[in-house]
Length: 402
Ligand code: PMT
Image 1 (cartoon, rainbow, N blue to C red):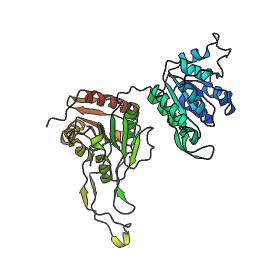
Image 2: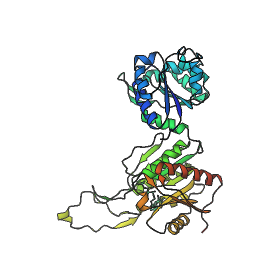
Image 3: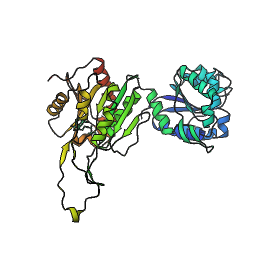
Image 4: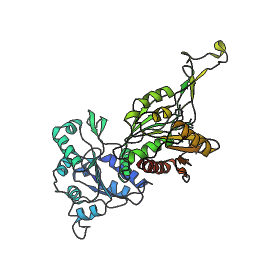
């Protein structure tokens, strides 16, 4: 529950995407948030207040003259109770009004009176979104420090295709969680690898390993939440890209190497979480090998490039972090790998704990020695690891002494 105890005022304005706001209330509640819904009059044409009341467990506020507020100041009371105000969907009209500081209904008055962060999830027809007037308002809202989530592109309720769709409720929840994370990596670009590689033998078979991508994806999410621009070079996994992370999908170690080396020089931090195959098949059979015709194959292997070592060897390259999965002698093997690859930090885990599951136990090794982290979920460990990386990088940590 990543929003435990957080008080969120959800403002719903008039648009067909208002029906998705109902799911948003449910998902925010599932993360532990207390959600107070306030609606514009237009929003009630799309979804009834009763739906939001039932889902949030709280009465819904519809206008600033609401008699339930003894002091007749609903806009002040609602905004003072909030840790964050989220408007989803935010219509073109509502954005125009708050971009101009108007305060002529409950929601706009509350937005003007607030002293907490404000996030808007725009939703409108693509032509309305592209209109120079809307774009002027968007620029002004951004200048005012207001966070805009999306919009996404795709098919719209009106049948047209383009930018203007409201983000999905799951993506909005991710952005709300991120809004509460300190931005220790703001302005930094983080390049990462995650998942396994797949080294083809023939048209259908290959050599791979049991990495699920969960540890690397958790780390990509934590870095994005800490304000970094994250590019994740991912081997074949069955999980979707974290919100706000630029994912590039590859298959083999050679593809991963090429994708990383094309971007490494521009990165501030490189983190190699992928379980990269040390070897690939020398000659990949074009067609499926036939048991009856070809007999048992003899597979010749050649060594793959070491991606992490190559990035660490770049002059003026990024701050490099490696991972090591070992079945024994964690400290000796991890420190040896760190020194061999010439990197300031390596993160060790036991193969029986690291691969596949949702939790892990990590031990960090740097020039100062060893820093064990208590067993926890991969998401929690990712946050702690980002903290360690920020501290170490801030201290100007150097590479291993050999
Ligand atoms: O994906 P999960 O199921 O969540 O599992 C996570 C994990 C166990 C895969 C992860 O936590 C982990 O330990 N990853 C590293 C696996 C490993 O043992 O790598 P290695 O010892 O082969 O390599 C050491 C480091 O060099 C790693 O950072 C690796 O990405 C990098 N490497 C290795 C070989 C190679 N050719 N290129 C590399 O960049």
